[in-house]
Length: 212
Image (tube, rainbow, N blue to C red; front, side, top):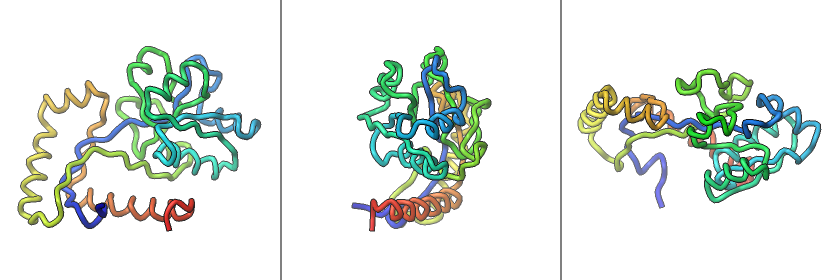
């Protein structure tokens, strides 16, 4: 057991992920608004797959559905490959969460929205949550943390070293090849970000009855 706020020292964030809501490329749904319109006209018939119950994709779409006053049907899978296979096979209408960028490049799936808090350099034309009027945070980040109690001077040295490494051509190329966005938060900013999201999701989970 560990406590996310008490048992780690935030050092630096160096990246993030591209998560989204997507459909088959030949789907009649051209936008996320189309999905909501369909859900409004066909309660519970909008099926979407994620990597599991209470995953970020599931939590976010259910919260959006609540705000839009529509009923949708969640289909949890063991992982993204299963969810994407079900989508391509026509067994579900949409997917929510991570996706295989090669399927986007090959024209097999169509992104309708990115589940992100900032625009994506990899998919600049795809709207993000706030573009569609949703204020949901989606804190799926890649960062470096250490155990609690690291002296400030050592934290600063590590932070400076990793920040410098982020400017290396090999790092930039590697992230680009993986379609992973580069994003930087220093130790203070990362710690504040973790605290803010911890409290947001604690309150959300209490509202959903998942925790007391």
